[in-house]
Amino acid sequence: MKKGIIGIVLLLSILGLNGKAVAQSRLSLCARFDVTPQLKSYYNSLDSILQTRLGDDFLFRFTTMPSFDPEYALQIESVEEQYFLKVISFDKNLWYAKDAAGINIDECFVELEKELAEQVLYLSKQFIDNKIDSVSVGSAIDGDLYQFEINENGVISCGQIWEPAPESPLDHFCLLCASLKDWCLTENKSKNQ
Image 1 (tube, rainbow, N blue to C red):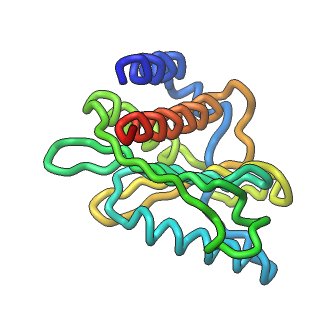
Image 2: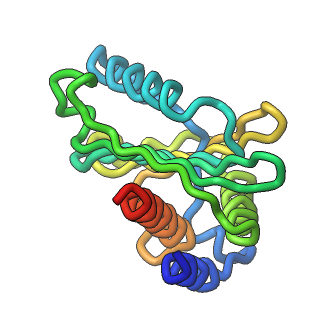
């Protein structure tokens, strides 16, 4: 566990978020591009899985919606001043699955150190608070869509980005979230062996 945390903390320190860094690549308002019946069905299936597997009791949620790779979502939760990371990771892309019921979903739930959880929450809030007030379609046909959500006393703020600029703070933050997902799933597998 220590090696995973050390790597994540190093990535957080590399981010070095400041006012100038946020301007390099910013989130836009969240929007669903459900202009076709297929997209509407995809989003309904994804939302249903997120609701069933993760629920609404989160402080921060990060969801990836790639064009070709499997989706995953993670969230940070707090229970009695302890922080936890909850992850769901699909085994194949929901868009290409014939039926959502045919997708296997790995899940994990691990405790996070308070300092790490608070830094991730701080960074995600900075990104969401600095989002632009418009919807960016980006490469809405193909690419990876990343969605960030913060839940503050039941009020959910959301921002999203299509393919963050390479080496930007948002790009690094997306890599951090992928590392958290991988770390959680690895920790969960080692506990179950």
